Length: 224
Image 1 (cartoon, rainbow, N blue to C red):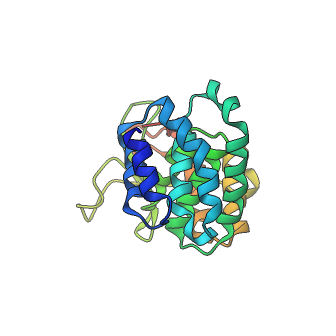
Image 2: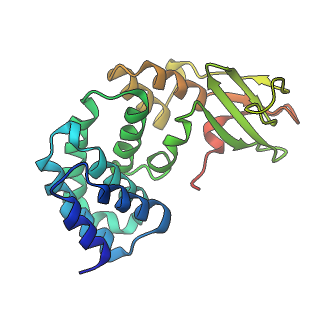
């Protein structure tokens, strides 16, 4: 029995078990073998099905992380398991959640749908900012869209009271397409207006404070 299988056996009877967090950390930050990925994907649907939607966070966050890391060529081998997990996630997404939990649920949901980028990186906007690189000059920029304002800057606005900044140009909901449209509509549908608004900035435009290049923020997001 592998360490992953031992942790899963210890976790499965309790949706609040600390072993779920350990499994998630192993999957996200350390990595797990193909055999352990297969083991988890085959067992997680049945385990998640025992829990109520409000108890499914740990198991479906883990499933989403595995899906985001799963090689595209291996998806057909887990078609039934992933379909079952998506079905469970549909009900899970509608259960009550604050903005932060909803964002992570949405990330897991799109990972289970096969979106490897936003299934791994959507959670980066959880603190109402995202750091991206200017496509023209390579400057690293903070793109902020929280209570402190909506702007781009190359300076550390968390430690400085005054920074050089440029205004953001949020996308109009009517102009969103592809992943941006899908994520925005899901957020609106579930009453998550703060997340929906943040997504208009993520899929909108920013202007570099160093070279004045305007670019689409989401185009500069890549897998870590």
